[in-house]
Length: 508
Image (cartoon, rainbow, N blue to C red; front, side, top):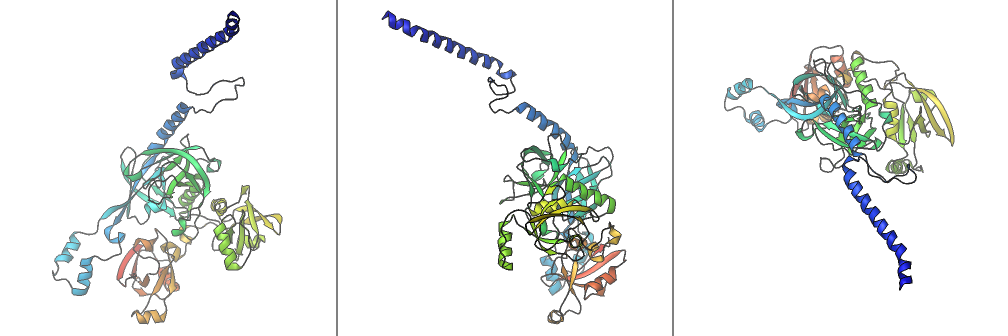
């Protein structure tokens, strides 16, 4: 028995000492837990630690960024007149059109006494980018506005001038008359990394100065959104899971230093509200657009001059193979399917079937990559295009041109009539004119969102009968009437229901 106790005694002592040590360690950490800003245990190698988050530092970064950003983010109210915000006649108007006005001049006097009023039709956000009142926002936030009201975070209100818009990137530039305003600096969005912390600041759902946090979920996203308002969309969005809702459009996406890395523009949602996917125009692209608008009055955009196939898109490749009876394999890169005549690509010797892999130092895997690389360039800029032809790699210098084949910058004065008024026109057949009793008319095509024609209620497929009281039967007729014209333009047109309107705008 004594021998057994002697054998067990060392184990008992070790157990008592181990228990005491553990108890002491627990009490120590209980005493000091409020003084610790990390959660890991030291090991023999101080570089090896259990994962932990220094939440205090992250919180401090968010607070700093929010304090910097909130004063520079504004609310934008879009006001449109009741008459221009809808192209539909009221029931009373239709009644009077067919049966006359049984009340004599009473209704006419009522109309004169109560002219159409500008009413809020949209609410969005904007970012002050200079102390003298320049504000960047989205094109869709300001589209169709008769008046734009800007409200600062301190509740001061201003009427803003719309300096210019770019439907291709969904960017708009406004200006208010004020000095010494808080503003944000553009950061280099090319340095943004997937996984880094970001803040979205704006006015979602009417909740002013709202800050949400998240990470960059992806870069170079194309969501086929801007093709609804532009024939040359540029989509290379920064995707974030920071909560973005209606009203956030035009607001700021910033890093933890409060630097502007993007302009919040869209969400991907089945409900119309936040579901975890928000998209922002990269700061580098947005900065280039506003610089062009400030200096030239419009965006200077260079084009490579190719029609292309995104080899990373399985559906596009399958559709192309089916239509062309080809056997192209999905991979990465952009395959040229057509070369535009008199383009930079043609001049440099690029051919149909070449696969573009790099623009300068940027790897091109998707169409969004190509869109971003070229979209930030101007006519006359030179880019190094690396491509694959017959399994071999080549690099050529391409001089970018505008859509008309030029390499010089253009101002508003250089724009064609159709570019100024925001639409094109197609000849109306004699058969159609006869069937519908029209003596003249052209079909409106490619109406630009936010353009002058859309502002007065003209949309694709509407029929324009007269311009400034003169009948028009071709695009040349419209251009002849308005070329060099300054003043108010009067447009007589018919909508899809056969209703006739006469509306006007000031020639840009």
